Image (cartoon, rainbow over the protein chains, first blue to last red):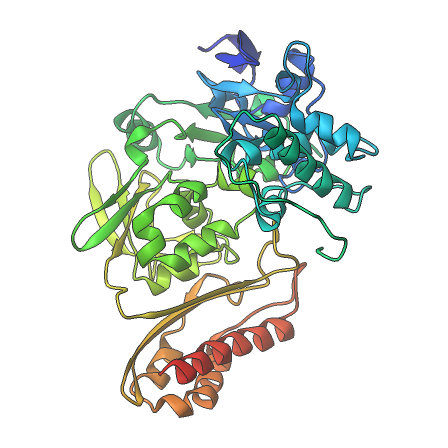
Length: 180
Length: 288
């Protein structure tokens, strides 16, 4: 819907709540999430789709929110890092990032968690190559990636141990340091 | 410097006829805006000079892949993720699927579209070499007309295309004639993921005993446009397979005109282009 001065109104769902956004149509979804909805967990790294720090889900698909003009989320279902944890429990990926030291400075971490959650939703038993491909769009300048890789492997194990999907094949992941 | 957002228009028509009407009303005033993976980068850098766009992302008419007897038709808004998942494309057009899988990371592949990759007209784009080799055709539709054109010849100069301002690229069509072809696609970039190509190479060939029956070769990042290397193809067609290497390299070096830029140098690109052709031709020799 068009408002005055070129500002439009956009109806969408963010973290399961219906929201009405008012913005210029070319405003980046990233900025609207952070500044209008105060969802500052989504970070800006490069601002050009290289680093993945701004990753969110739109209609279940991971995207770079710095590359989405807000006019394109009319009617969309958006999930940000704030919507990943349950009411009283972290997501297995978040818990694994804590246990395996997957976060250092923290700027890439929300995007890394989003990419890992996306990967495990599509493929609960990823191979090492699958994990690398799943995280290929996310850059980290602290960890050297191995801690992050190990966190995702750890999250797979957690998921498997939770026993929710009992028929899953139990591939074991033993990350080694010479894989990069 | 970041862009001044109030100066940009992004209109959202509800269907294809409305979008075409907008394009026809003042030809050249509005340009189509698809997944945004290139245009938003320019916007953030303050380098998006055109100001008025039509948001075509939600136009269902431009989505979907349809395989019939003689060709596969791909909606212009088909994403790289959708291309990689389609069984007919995977089986018959693996170079297009590989190009899609090597364009950006998953987040880009979920938004980047095949039509956008063509119409953005970057000489470094990943899918055009595959499309050129597959003899793709493009459907260009306006409020009052519709035409199919060969993709080969669509790019007429750097960022120049054989399309009218009131026309929209709606579909891409590939003839299903890849059976028995040997196919080879290789993108060379700084790293495996996310990189823009230094050189991008696609080729198919068929053999007839000791001779090369047919060959098609296309490259990206070695000229102002993605190029189909017709002179090199002509030099190789019908030749003995064990003599292709030198003939091919001598022809290709005259056909590509790469430049030095931020990603690579002309010399490196020539060397890599020749090496990729050499690799493909030697594989033909070892498999024939």
